[in-house]
Length: 137
Length: 98
Image 1 (tube, helix red, strand yellow):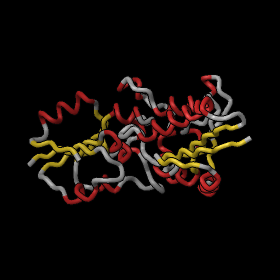
Image 2 (cartoon, helix red, strand yellow):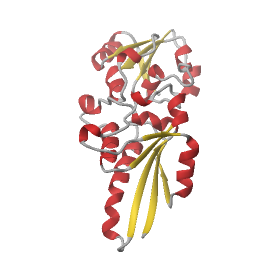
Image 3 (tube, one colour):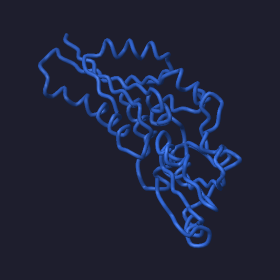
Image 4 (cartoon, helix red, strand yellow):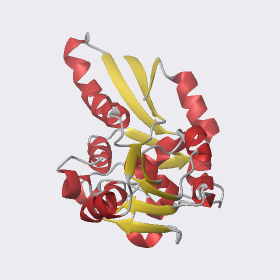
């Protein structure tokens, strides 16, 4: 079986630009390319938040309440709901004085089982090395 | 002059902001500018808040990004859109956006 890994790397802050939203919607949508693949081929998207991008992962984003817009948090939960692998850079989480309790780590309220992981940057670098394609947002 | 500045960047615009001066300066943190009011990097608050100015942060943009008013630096006053209208009309003669 041939598997292509797509790395979606989010380094941008949320909302001012569409970058991080596009990373999540594209990573979710990338699973649908299966219809264009040959038998035995698969695609595995992974999403990594690094640098200021880790601030996309904060809980309780109220974009819908104030602007009638889907929040980045909602997209992140949808990504986890469809079992995407989501990694958050440990060093950057610590730089901002955040803890796992501050971040969206799962989509349990939607019935999802997948959990995001806080990992050292070296692990994310390894994932980037191993990915077949990378996109930075 | 009495100058109100809307500031919507977290990592940018500081080169202008550092030199900007006014008899009365108000900096209104909106959009990604709200991170100056809430985030501490390596335990340190934003250097922007060292500036001699009155600071305000838009509550709607704070909450959109997952923060609450109780997380705001004590040097910054949380305001709503309605409050900002009052600031524009009552407190500052000129308004710019950085």
